[in-house]
Length: 237
Image (cartoon, rainbow, N blue to C red; front, side, top):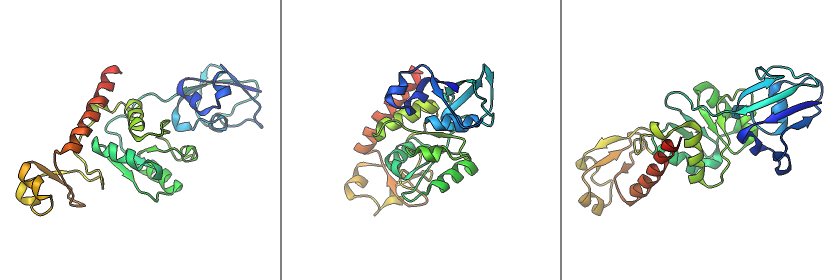
């Protein structure tokens, strides 16, 4: 028998009846690794920051002997520098929001699980996925499971989890293809924006890859309100 205590939001991965328990009693086969033991209970290893076995810090490879007491803490520290992301197929709207905030975000509607894991590992990107199986792959180091189903609330979670408020660069990246935007003069976008827009606006941005043109319309005003809300989260931290 092994006694396990999960702290904080790691309990989100337990069934409702188990969340109320302070500790869990587990009867593993043999002496499993810490990673295998934790993931057998639900939490994927990228969501874990620290593990102690019998009060001693250990790695995921540590073998857990019968009679051990295992404590597990959630990952809370933000990624250093400007984090980059790769998202699974079900998080298309979240990818657009992250690009809108200026974060390098890869997304396709046909990413396979093994491709997500490989990209995360080789490019040091944070995997955002609602598929726990992806996060449990051994090559994945950085990853998060958005708890909410609503894309805006998912964005709030990710901003909080990775401390993105102070690192946002809103409206600097193409929400369609992820390329960095560049300023454009009105004559450069002639014929590429509606006639009324060309008459009312003098400041534009364009994507060098997909050639889309952006301007400060009503949609950007709504997005600015969301940006202000997210920046307020940083002061709460």
